[in-house]
Length: 104
Image (cartoon, rainbow, N blue to C red; front, side):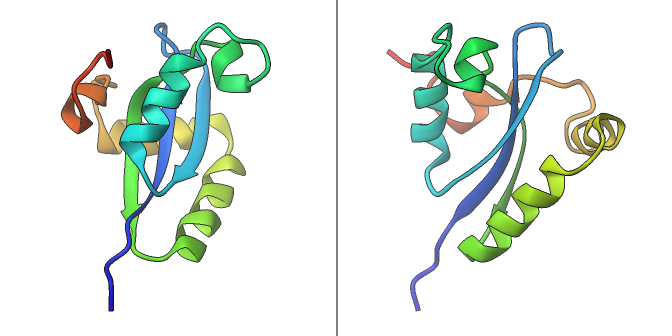
């Protein structure tokens, strides 16, 4: 059976004030898409310049990833902050840990 990878992730803006939660099967491509859409008002992440990765988790099955994304989206901000801080105490931007950053 083939191993699948799905990622639930949280990105933020430069000031770490806006949080966006998403799910993808290709985190590198998705980060590039968020970066490419920065400043474009047609998407939430673009409108608020959210392209800095601060949290992610990997799942083998897409249904588990989607369920987890919905769970995180339903959390109050304080709980999301605790989740991020437990994973990434300094709220370091993790894009460079995942891929060459910034993308060219």
